[in-house]
Image (cartoon, rainbow, N blue to C red; front, top):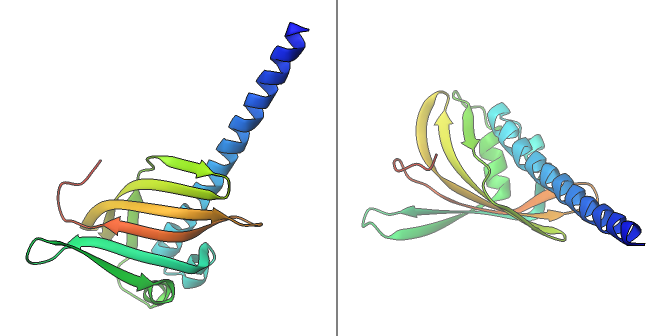
Length: 152
Protein backbone atom coordinates (compact mmCIF):
# COMPACT_ATOMS: atom_id res chain seq x y z
CA UNK A 1 0.00 0.00 0.00
CA UNK A 2 2.87 2.39 0.83
CA UNK A 3 4.41 1.75 -2.58
CA UNK A 4 1.18 2.65 -4.37
CA UNK A 5 0.85 5.86 -2.35
CA UNK A 6 4.49 6.74 -3.07
CA UNK A 7 3.96 6.02 -6.79
CA UNK A 8 0.90 8.29 -6.85
CA UNK A 9 2.85 11.11 -5.19
CA UNK A 10 5.79 10.72 -7.61
CA UNK A 11 3.47 10.74 -10.64
CA UNK A 12 1.62 13.82 -9.36
CA UNK A 13 4.83 15.75 -8.70
CA UNK A 14 6.32 14.70 -12.05
CA UNK A 15 3.19 15.79 -13.92
CA UNK A 16 3.25 19.18 -12.20
CA UNK A 17 6.95 19.64 -12.98
CA UNK A 18 6.35 18.69 -16.64
CA UNK A 19 3.45 21.16 -16.93
CA UNK A 20 5.61 23.91 -15.41
CA UNK A 21 8.47 23.15 -17.83
CA UNK A 22 6.08 23.07 -20.78
CA UNK A 23 4.64 26.45 -19.74
CA UNK A 24 8.15 27.88 -19.34
CA UNK A 25 9.06 26.68 -22.84
CA UNK A 26 5.93 28.31 -24.29
CA UNK A 27 6.68 31.58 -22.50
CA UNK A 28 10.26 31.62 -23.80
CA UNK A 29 9.02 30.75 -27.30
CA UNK A 30 6.74 33.81 -27.37
CA UNK A 31 9.48 36.13 -26.12
CA UNK A 32 12.07 34.65 -28.51
CA UNK A 33 9.60 35.08 -31.39
CA UNK A 34 9.32 38.77 -30.51
CA UNK A 35 13.09 39.21 -30.69
CA UNK A 36 13.31 37.18 -33.91
CA UNK A 37 10.66 39.50 -35.40
CA UNK A 38 12.69 42.54 -34.33
CA UNK A 39 15.84 41.15 -35.98
CA UNK A 40 13.89 40.35 -39.18
CA UNK A 41 11.95 43.63 -39.21
CA UNK A 42 8.74 41.57 -39.38
CA UNK A 43 5.82 43.46 -37.80
CA UNK A 44 3.33 40.67 -38.57
CA UNK A 45 5.42 38.11 -36.69
CA UNK A 46 5.87 40.63 -33.88
CA UNK A 47 2.12 41.21 -33.52
CA UNK A 48 1.51 37.45 -33.45
CA UNK A 49 2.87 37.27 -29.88
CA UNK A 50 1.19 40.43 -28.58
CA UNK A 51 -2.16 40.50 -26.80
CA UNK A 52 -4.62 42.97 -28.29
CA UNK A 53 -4.21 45.62 -25.56
CA UNK A 54 -0.47 45.11 -25.02
CA UNK A 55 1.37 47.96 -23.25
CA UNK A 56 5.04 48.95 -23.54
CA UNK A 57 6.76 51.21 -21.03
CA UNK A 58 10.35 52.28 -20.42
CA UNK A 59 11.99 53.72 -17.35
CA UNK A 60 14.99 55.92 -18.00
CA UNK A 61 16.78 58.88 -16.47
CA UNK A 62 16.20 62.39 -17.77
CA UNK A 63 18.81 65.16 -18.06
CA UNK A 64 18.21 66.15 -14.44
CA UNK A 65 18.99 62.59 -13.30
CA UNK A 66 15.39 61.78 -12.35
CA UNK A 67 13.59 58.57 -13.26
CA UNK A 68 10.94 59.04 -15.93
CA UNK A 69 8.52 56.63 -17.55
CA UNK A 70 7.45 56.65 -21.18
CA UNK A 71 4.63 54.65 -22.75
CA UNK A 72 4.40 53.42 -26.34
CA UNK A 73 1.59 51.66 -28.16
CA UNK A 74 2.08 48.17 -29.53
CA UNK A 75 1.00 49.40 -32.97
CA UNK A 76 3.62 52.18 -33.00
CA UNK A 77 6.28 49.70 -31.90
CA UNK A 78 5.26 47.21 -34.61
CA UNK A 79 5.25 49.99 -37.21
CA UNK A 80 8.79 51.02 -36.19
CA UNK A 81 9.97 47.40 -36.40
CA UNK A 82 8.34 46.90 -39.80
CA UNK A 83 9.64 50.16 -41.29
CA UNK A 84 12.81 49.46 -43.31
CA UNK A 85 15.95 50.37 -41.42
CA UNK A 86 19.64 49.90 -42.20
CA UNK A 87 20.75 48.23 -38.96
CA UNK A 88 19.36 45.04 -37.46
CA UNK A 89 17.60 45.56 -34.11
CA UNK A 90 19.31 42.90 -32.04
CA UNK A 91 18.21 42.58 -28.42
CA UNK A 92 20.05 39.87 -26.53
CA UNK A 93 18.51 38.70 -23.28
CA UNK A 94 19.37 36.36 -20.47
CA UNK A 95 16.38 34.69 -18.86
CA UNK A 96 16.16 35.31 -15.14
CA UNK A 97 13.19 34.50 -12.96
CA UNK A 98 10.11 33.10 -14.64
CA UNK A 99 7.07 32.99 -12.38
CA UNK A 100 3.80 31.33 -13.38
CA UNK A 101 0.40 31.37 -11.70
CA UNK A 102 -2.23 29.70 -13.84
CA UNK A 103 -2.69 31.82 -16.97
CA UNK A 104 -0.34 34.62 -15.84
CA UNK A 105 3.44 34.65 -16.18
CA UNK A 106 6.15 37.14 -15.29
CA UNK A 107 9.68 37.15 -16.71
CA UNK A 108 12.74 39.15 -15.59
CA UNK A 109 15.41 39.32 -18.32
CA UNK A 110 18.57 41.46 -18.39
CA UNK A 111 19.42 42.55 -21.94
CA UNK A 112 21.88 44.28 -24.21
CA UNK A 113 20.60 46.03 -27.33
CA UNK A 114 22.66 46.37 -30.51
CA UNK A 115 22.05 48.28 -33.72
CA UNK A 116 23.73 45.88 -36.10
CA UNK A 117 26.92 44.98 -34.26
CA UNK A 118 27.16 48.32 -32.42
CA UNK A 119 26.16 48.35 -28.73
CA UNK A 120 23.37 50.85 -28.06
CA UNK A 121 22.12 50.33 -24.49
CA UNK A 122 21.26 47.78 -21.84
CA UNK A 123 18.89 47.22 -18.96
CA UNK A 124 16.26 44.77 -17.81
CA UNK A 125 13.07 43.70 -19.59
CA UNK A 126 10.13 42.65 -17.43
CA UNK A 127 7.42 40.80 -19.33
CA UNK A 128 3.89 39.88 -18.28
CA UNK A 129 2.22 37.21 -20.39
CA UNK A 130 -1.17 35.54 -20.43
CA UNK A 131 -2.00 32.03 -21.55
CA UNK A 132 -4.53 31.91 -24.37
CA UNK A 133 -6.08 28.91 -26.10
CA UNK A 134 -3.25 28.92 -28.65
CA UNK A 135 -0.13 30.26 -26.89
CA UNK A 136 1.35 32.66 -24.38
CA UNK A 137 0.73 36.29 -25.40
CA UNK A 138 2.74 39.27 -24.18
CA UNK A 139 0.44 41.70 -22.39
CA UNK A 140 2.99 44.08 -20.87
CA UNK A 141 6.65 44.98 -21.20
CA UNK A 142 8.49 47.46 -19.03
CA UNK A 143 12.22 47.99 -19.38
CA UNK A 144 15.05 50.04 -17.99
CA UNK A 145 17.57 51.69 -20.28
CA UNK A 146 21.13 52.80 -19.69
CA UNK A 147 24.49 52.86 -21.45
CA UNK A 148 26.65 51.34 -18.69
CA UNK A 149 26.57 49.09 -15.63
CA UNK A 150 25.00 46.33 -17.70
CA UNK A 151 23.94 43.15 -15.93
CA UNK A 152 25.65 40.09 -17.37
